[in-house]
Length: 286
Image (cartoon, rainbow, N blue to C red; front, side):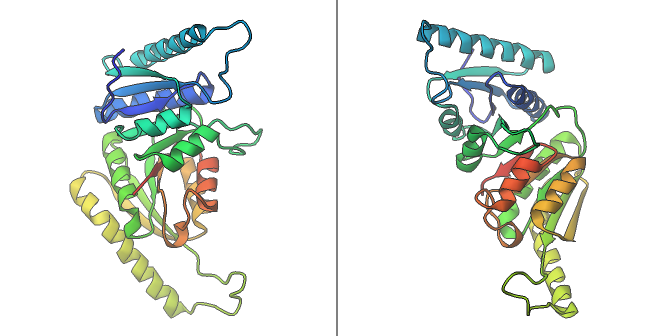
């Protein structure tokens, strides 16, 4: 298969159920948006050392068979979809991050190891989500046929890239878009004496509404057929996004936020969203 994947949807596969779910999501996304699909399989550092009596060529053959199986599945789901493949000799995370330089989107499965939902985010998906240079979609379970709103977390000007990607996805899916700004002004540890007045709350809500409207405005104009609504919600950001994800087809967040989304990817908000959301999550780097 050809190896060219300029602006394709790149999906990392490893033979796991989560990898198969990622493939199906990537096929559906590429089909809906008129893009090619690039399927990448790579040895996992530390996990693909040749066992006794097995030569590296046999490992390559196993990787080739896995890729061929996934190509057949992609063609079953979307006949005529342009598909290319790659068997990378480097670690999976390294190969996927490298591919992100030329990809439209990178899609990975969330290979959790715990019994509880979201207990552990796989190391590959965590590394790719943190370091990729294009949007990254993390898929936890089969959801290719799930329909619903595209949900995006916004918190001001820093959310512009996430909003753009959310509009693009909503337009391709013929789906509505819901933008959520979560805020929390109640007293916290060390600030027990601070109780915001009604005037302060009202002023904050007006400013938040203006900020969200400004973020959405250029994309409303570019995608006039996308039904859009935005909400200013008094809630902990991670909690409301996880809760709303039960009815969403896709949740989109920025790589780093301000205000309620401060520290996204490195802090508790990103961990909870990526680990606990009930739909695929896209992280968009600014």
